[in-house]
Length: 290
Length: 247
Image (cartoon, rainbow over all chains, first blue to last red; front, side, top):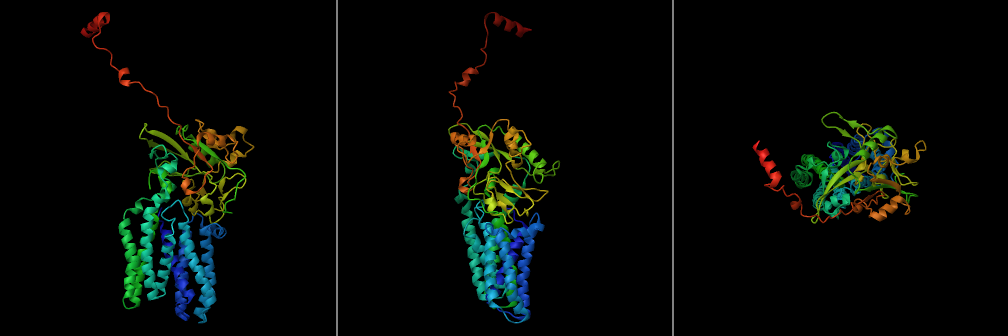
């Protein structure tokens, strides 16, 4: 799949933002006054920036409000509804913490639950797609959830929690890669099943339908992005999870946390690039490519 | 609504005969023509006369080669368009309700004025049946020529999808696949019509007829038939040959 920068930015930034809101909502860190203004501000800014980046991915952003209507069937619509609900429900808790020094736990808890559901909905947009076997697996949501919660804990400066979550994220990434590498074969789709000619013999593409490229090839058969897959996996695991975990073992300081945050975001960008670039869509079978 | 109907009254669709298709691409061109000139946003081309021309098509013909252990290789031309699946994954993922499956005939359509161009439906389709138009930025797909099949301004014989109407080989058939007595259903039953990628769980309405078994002729030894003309003619012809040689 095509690793669109807007989608990489969206999933990383808004994931972290909603992750931070989960912890702030649960009251694990209950700041008041200026600290609350800054922390909630960062959470809202990241979540909102991600949503705006995602809107740039649309062909017709002016119709984006229609995406709130199909929550009964569509995970993308659920994500839109849940993200808006999170930001709305959390607002009294955030405002009261910042301006009245009085957290409102009921709004906080409800907002935290909604934020968690938003992150899960984001993951399910990808995990639901059966035509991309690497994504269509239980190992996809844990990567998104742990990445968001670990990044959020880091932003909230919850050192022990962030450390545990970073290690969990590392394990989830590895599990997703190991499982993902087997997924295409396990799905059972081949050029034989795609054409229905498999029973006759070995099927291979003789002539593509056209000499140029097309939307499907650009969007779904993005082979170029896999070139440095092995190195990028090491960067994702090292910078995204294990590096920050190691930094968190040092005596707590804003320097260490800031550095861990920098590493984590960099590594997560690499992880998301691979998440898209390594995902092979079964439509490639019609083009003799994976 | 992007929830799928529990069942549809009819299941209009195509039956494509892989034995008969000659790979002429006439269906591709007629499809592009009809769907550019009629319903919805036109199917655009970009850089049509430049170095990397690209275009939106709702129907494309691939050609595959099947190599077999016990028989010569076989070339199969393979037209591919939307299969109007019963369990269409493209419909349920749509966040806006632009994608829907009609209860009355099972056709899967896109309401272009509701489409936000997110592309998720194209990701969800295992067959590559949907393409985002490069100019209009809305999702385009086969409509089963919904603006032809019920169009009373057209002559009766033209009220079928334009790809079917155009096919010079008669490789494309249109009808109601929910009705076991329809011509298409009988064709599917007689020829072992098959689903593409059944493991994807989409339950496609369109069916493909596999190539028939090729004749296995008891071919005589061709080498004997191709023996060169005998050397050293005798008699009159021999004299003529020698005389001409000397000239």
